[in-house]
Image (cartoon, rainbow, N blue to C red):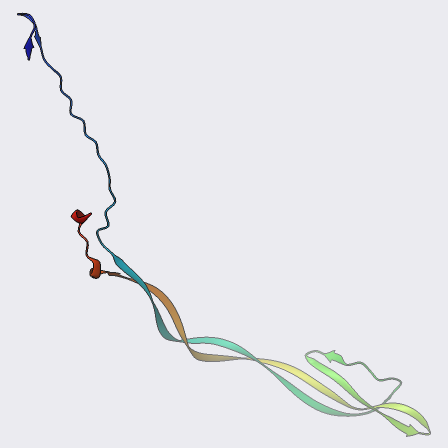
Length: 134
């Protein structure tokens, strides 16, 4: 304080200033690896199994021309024909093949292996660094 006059006194004003800086410092290491786990499970589901049954039916019917295969419900009918020599030539159906489709559901259990990847994080202690070394 510096006196100016007898009634006045000068007081100096002081100010402190702070400057903050950040510095990135490596302090630790980690190692990340993946591991595949395998789990054996049994899968259960329904399989649809198709079967064909072929039945031969004897037929002795005269026709003018060979018939096309046709469906009778779930059955496909295929006519087998032959030509016969009778004073004149005539066409006969001698047999029909009846092919029937049936479907059955069958429950099955199938063992399978399921794989899952997971991450394992470990500390890497080989390169230990401290915050004050940098």
